Length: 143
Image (cartoon, rainbow, N blue to C red; front, side, top):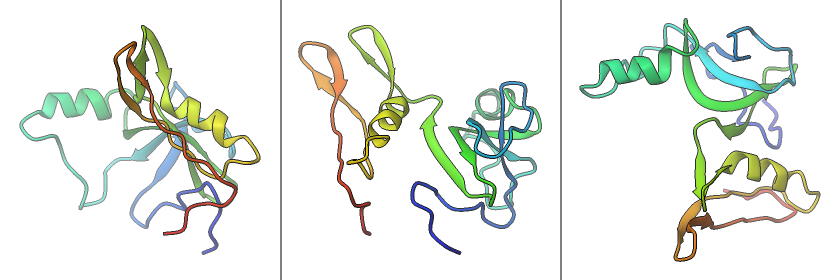
C-alpha cells in the first residue's frame, strides 16, 4: 500500500470508518466532515469508560446514532485513505478566545515551506494559556 503524505492510511480490516456531516449522512470523497466508526466496534475496542457507562454513551455514541464518534474531523479520498485534519474537541482558551489547535495546524500546514506542524497549549503569565510550539520544515519527519 503506497504512503500518501498527510494521510493516516486506510482503515484496518474490521473497522468501517466513514466521514459524515452533522446529520450523520455520508459526505462525498474529499469533503470535510466528522470521522466516525460504524457500530459494532471490532472486538478489541473499548466497550465503555471505566465505571462511566452513561458518560461513554453521551460522549461517543449519542451524537451520531449507529456510529462511534472519534472526535476527529477530516476526509477520505477516492481510494479510501483517511486524512485527519483536526480534533473537534481540542480547544485552547487564550485570553478568553477559544482557539482550535487543529484549525491553526491546518492553516500553517497549508504553507509551501511547512511539511508538518503541531500546536499545543502552554501556561503563560500574561494570558493563562498560549500557543506553545510550531514545528515546520520542507521534509516530513522520518521515524
